[in-house]
Image (cartoon, rainbow, N blue to C red; front, top):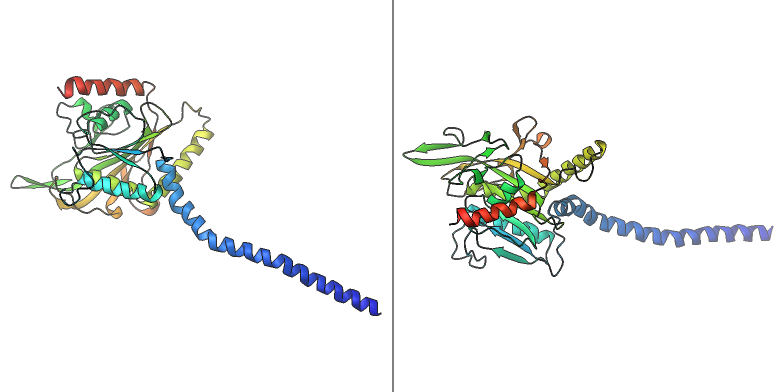
Length: 329
């Protein structure tokens, strides 16, 4: 009987030993998972959708170029520069990108009256075609679903949105988007858009256009695209779009390679040249299928997906040459 008790005691000790041996590592692993998971989820919830939109993939030798409709603007001269919507848009976007890519380098293309031709870097265009001629040329080459189509006008100064046939979809009207008192306009609504498209040289890099009808619209577009919650919503929309492409058996050359988010910004009544504050709650997204502006969480609008023309590269070169030979002469 003694050997039976000894065997039972040994078995009990063995089970306890294995429990301890297995329990310690599993407890450590569980603790690590609990400690790390909030950071992992935070990255998945915030940073991943934002990086998925920008896709800058900046390496130490690479840099990001801002092409802004501000001549000879020096970001270091904060105390001497009077902020405008485009300057505030630049600051908003750069702070957002800085959080995602802390080591990225910044270059500024401070020649808004000359079309940019290099396209060796990731480029973010800020400001519409009136003051930023690179934006004007790129929009002409892209032919997006809705834009001001500034290249078709002699003064390059349409503040609304037109479709590809030239039909006016959104325009500023007295009593609807602005009021006029003693000859002074007071703006309280503006249109804006965010576009992501391949660069004209198609070097696996994206080019971005952030612009509005007036300077407040440009700032509103920059504010919208700088919010992680909006880019998270856009990330889900892009996933659904990819699923639709797969179910429709579209080839790589038939799938959209560009997207456009059309925005309506409601602002505190102000003169068009003056920039007022904008919050995310003041901005609605256009739903092209219904022709409505949506703001509620479950009733947001939808991005518009399109494919760049086959002649995209040649078209940009044509419009850039035209800008230098005719528009700037």
